Image (spheres, rainbow, N blue to C red):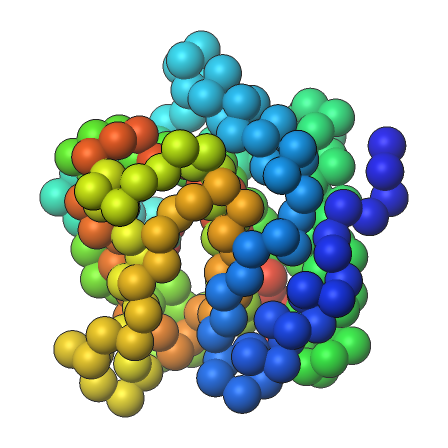
Length: 209
Ligand SMILES: O=C(O)CCC(=O)C(=O)O
Ligand SMILES: [Fe+2]
């Protein structure tokens, strides 16, 4: 297993943007072959019925709500995941350490899931760590769609922390596109997708503070 799949030069550029703007987008942080293998695995797992309809809200009020969130997810597990999943988790560990070295975030762990939005699915505007009250500090998304075209929808719309109606950017979910942003700052939304939309999403956490 290759130790490091991350292109550290491209990651450094992302970190510059993260420092300046609290969000960053890049391609070619992970190799195309690695992303293609992850995409295939996500597709295979979904075909086998292994992904579950995502739920929303806190444990007491957990509901499945397709209006708010249309994706199917599968959490990656260190113990039970495939070698490929373990390899991805190892890359996230490299990333966790680099985030701590650069931003002193005291990140102790991360969580990550495959996500698949079927046609017609999206995710309404939300903040991952509302009012900064939770442990999620940095959100990442790695998109896994090899043949994505503009008319397919499914963009990630990112809004200003100061004004939730001010659109900052729309990111196409193309294979290898990698996004990082502060989990407590940015309202964001997944636009309705017209094709199956695959990704790996996750959060670097500081559970101590
Ligand atoms: O897939 C995306 O572009 C964003 C997903 C998202 O916002 C989430 O899972 O919290
Ligand atoms: Fe989100």
